[in-house]
Length: 139
Image (cartoon, rainbow, N blue to C red; front, side, top):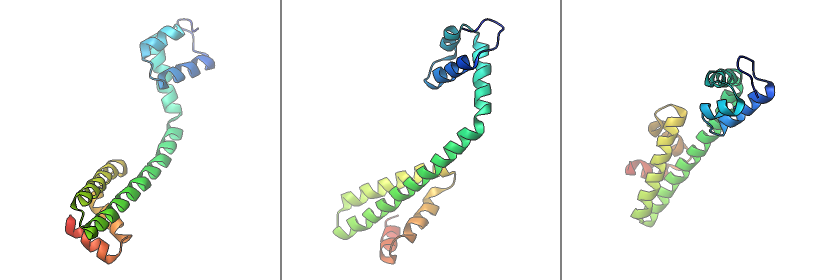
């Protein structure tokens, strides 16, 4: 255990990080390591600073996957709109439109741009002209 005024050991820092990532609050970690809450905050902030490039890279990789998945969901939903329209199933058509709009909204948040216009255009690019015209009529 850490002594007041003494730096934490590597093992204690790893324990601090592990506890923090598991959702423990600063006070619990300080009691566990027998140190002050300021020490916990200092080492946590230092760990965050030291790992920032790695964490950003990881999140950026995941962000691309999420964007790709949302684009796929939106495209498939719009294809479902067209098929439901052709089948005359208004209930399914509405459900597919709702699913597409939810995907566009989420994409807007993740990608940081106005998704409805851009993604609709990208989605229509993967459809036939008839499918795109039918989907545009529904918007």
